[in-house]
Image 1 (cartoon, rainbow, N blue to C red):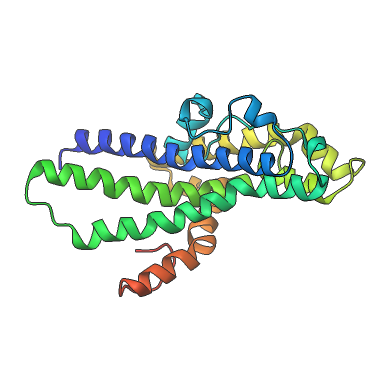
Image 2 (tube, helix red, strand yellow):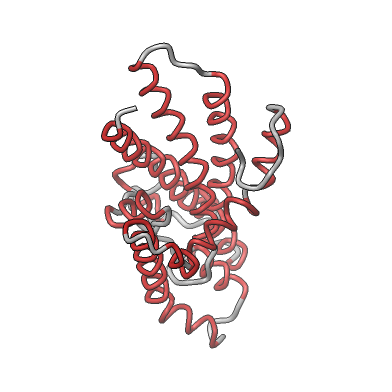
Length: 244
């Protein structure tokens, strides 16, 4: 397959995957917040599957090229929740739970194309390759976003979980609120630099310093293992880390 066309297909598949990962994630936050009594997200037009309402350009570009990124945070007012801690906790985990469900559904679609589809023409090969990559990236990005968003740094969902389980005067909570975003930016930049330098400068040892690379490995091989193991058994494939 033409390398240039393959690269274009990969980028397009990445865009599709990002939309399927982030839009339902943010919608889930808005919907569960609404169910808990807070209509803030709905009033701001965020309780929708319209991608324009949710996409953050920088976060999306980073996700396509690094596997980690973000969308526009859904505005909530936890003081509107009928039960503060329960509402904060369930709203915080709504997005990642949705991502895990999406990963569970995307993986078998990837397997169907990978195993049973044999293109007879060049055009068909391009089309199947696009869908094959799209479903796999939806699976991969869903698990990456699941794991990434559970990191306890403000403004990620993991920090909201910390908020729901601790008191406001907790010093760890205050530290994560004040400095979490800087730690987060540093981790993303460090991961991006290590990945690109290791790839293009052929300095393979740098991949061992890619902190978020370990997070992604854990997401795919540990968090994603129940998904790949189940579907691999159903499709008659070996059960192993990382899926196929």
